[in-house]
Image 1 (cartoon, rainbow, N blue to C red):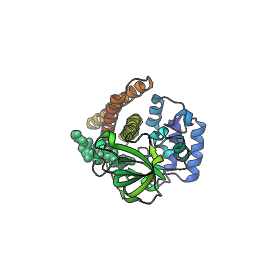
Image 2: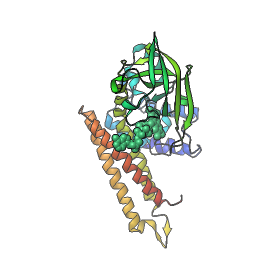
Image 3: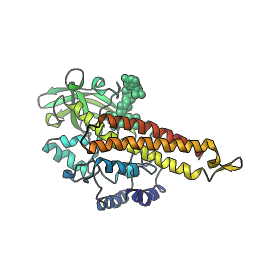
Length: 331
Ligand SMILES: Cc1cc2nc3c(=O)[nH]c(=O)nc-3n(C[C@H](O)[C@H](O)[C@H](O)COP(=O)(O)OP(=O)(O)OC[C@H]3O[C@@H](n4cnc5c(N)ncnc54)[C@H](O)[C@@H]3O)c2cc1C
């Protein structure tokens, strides 16, 4: 169902879109959202009690494998028409926070960002976070900066992780921050290898945040951040492999069509080896992803499995895409 949707609805639209587009025209988007709702799949990663589809992790993984098989698929699978909970940790919000921030986000009315990484480093945020929040009465005053934050320039609010205590995990608190507040500034767009869905640098200059905008517990921010990162590893891994599957499919189609030195590329053993390696890399990654997904569905620990799956999926997919590009030459 999702495969047909991608091939019949998404791929044809891309012919008329800017190659770097990461959004559909509003009327197309609304039409396709209506279709995903009809399919019963709107609201991916949103728990059923909040209106999301009642699907298990294996099914979510299958959707991710298919929904990425188009030009912008890696960063905006199906241009977001399957909806979804961008900030999964908002389900841990208070009722008042949910009314103000979560439900409008789920309805697609508010956009969000996730502000964890800083110029001081992203791999080890528990130690690296230098942004500091100091309490003044019923407010917190935040100063610092965040780097590589996706979509902050288009967001209405976001989660900002700041140090409220000493070094380490227990000193980090998560705040819900509105981008229109004084003291919040998107300093610049940060261009990375990806052109669509670019990242940003944020400066927080005496940003005043009400105490009730703490998400979870004071000092509990790192657990919230970590939870999000673990949960998302499985669909992220599957999205990488979806892109690899498409690239490999294109290479398999192209190799017999292109002739060099009097014979099709596909007749050369060097090219055949590349295609075989592609197939092996894709299958190995897919098996690891389904291992993690099925453990998650059975309620077994899956943190290590999801980390391994994400590592292998991203590295294997990179190799598959690279080989597939080489087979296409200068195309
Ligand atoms: C396109 C893009 C979008 C992003 N969006 C967001 C976002 O929305 N929100 C957000 O918070 N962050 C975001 N990030 C930041 C991302 O999470 C960080 O870049 C990532 O965590 C790595 O941090 P770093 O770049 O500081 O690298 P570092 O932490 O400085 O690491 C540098 C290198 O050293 C390696 N390394 C680290 N520690 C060790 C070790 N102990 N031993 C050996 N090697 C090590 C790393 O693997 C890496 O290769 C985004 C990044 C990119 C590129």
